[in-house]
Image 1 (cartoon, rainbow, N blue to C red):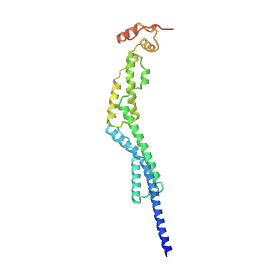
Image 2: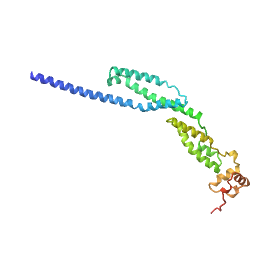
Image 3: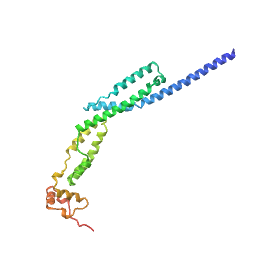
Image 4: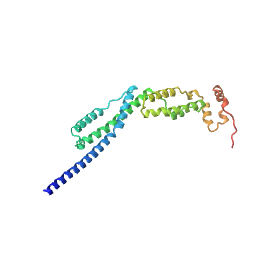
Amino acid sequence: MAITDKAKATLVRLNKISEARDGVDEAQALDSLRGRLLQFVAPIKILSSNAKLLANQGVALSGVTEIGSTLETVKKVSMRFVEIPKSTTLKQGTRWTGLISKLEVLVKKVGEAQTNDWKVFFGSKYFGGISPTQREAKLAQTPQNKKALESYKKLYQNFIAYRLNIPKDAEDFKSLEVMSEQLAQIKFQEDDDVPEDVRKFFEATNTGAGLELLTIEVIEWLRNNNLLSSYIVRAKLN
């Protein structure tokens, strides 16, 4: 009888150990699944915040069909898990892999849609001038143009960065509006406003312009633009 009692007691202890082990395994399994879902929290929060900000700033947002189907999948999986809160419930069949796949597609599609919608809005609302490199290639290298181009480059670099990255808040939109207006106000002396001889003279000043380039037309143009005193004649050293 004593042996039977000891056997029963041992069996009870073994069952408790087994249950505890199963509980730990289940907790670890659920924690692993939870960790995978948490990877979607940050990107979805960002997309949600972007959508609200863009809409408030008048950006037309495209519809994304994946939103509805993903929400439906999340709802079904959640309801099933409430009924049977076990990791096996989530991993049954293609339930888990299907959920993860839909969330991945959702983040990708919504992100692409927001980026495209923003670029369309950016291109239609803000400054649409050419890049500093393109602008410089078309300009005569006059002092006025060099100064204007320096300002243009600094502003344009900060301005165009917004085209690739959606603004983070309303203050960014205000800054973007200001930069757009400042870029539009920068004035250049276009080639049509600069005689050919003057253009050649300024192109040569970087390496040393010969006197043959200092024509009457160039001298008059420099005088009319208050630049005559900015240049001196210096003998070339052989």
